[in-house]
Length: 332
Image (cartoon, rainbow, N blue to C red; front, side, top):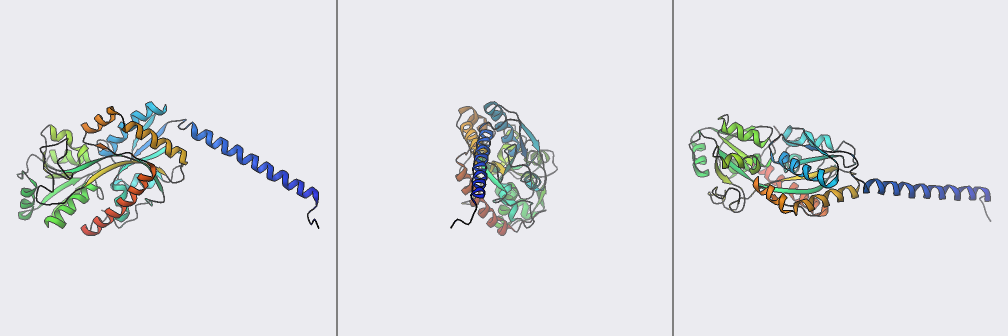
């Protein structure tokens, strides 16, 4: 027995057909919109100030993406809280690929720092690309007597010293805290700034005695002789500053540490948009021109797939959680 009148069945069939047609049209429009991405300027919201690693990479990549994607990439620096202010803001913006976060390893550090950073690193963001990485470097200002890391540790044991970084929770901060407090067991006071460039400038000017910085923010001043390299955190001596010994060479074997810079999009950004960004950045990193530009400022290209970037972020979150626990560092 047919319990539903034929006219109602007919109406239901029409409604279903209409819904399917609408869904197909909507899907087609969505695919078309993604295929034309970007159709307007893209904002790179940088979590640290001008002259630091994130800013350097944002401007390099932004310039090249402007050329390859046919739309301007606009740089906007939003500094503060070790990069967390920008990260807390961008994930609340429309997930359409037009507002992207450019940040450093600090993104993976902040969730372990004992204070809610305003975002969930895995749930609120998609890491479109790990663009490049660089070691950190300990540098001395002109007035500091120490000429090596060993001499710096000896001086710290006999009197108070301070050091500058790009901010609490950055890898240069944790690098120095782990080295000084956990390994060398000396007390050196941390003074945070808003970028690696500011930290280095403060050290040159005598406001601080030492700076712990990602290499790109210090390399030009090192080459100009305005600061002295005490130790670099790479596994072996780094090509950009071959005369600076590693931390491992300086009495702390096995020590190795890097700062990476990545481009992230709010969760929910269409997969096609993420794939386009990832592909464009990978193509860019494969060029000799970009590799040379990165080398000049002390970076090495990374790149890779979106899934590789996601796995890398998970590893970094776990790694820095261990370092934060060992150093006892908390948000300042």
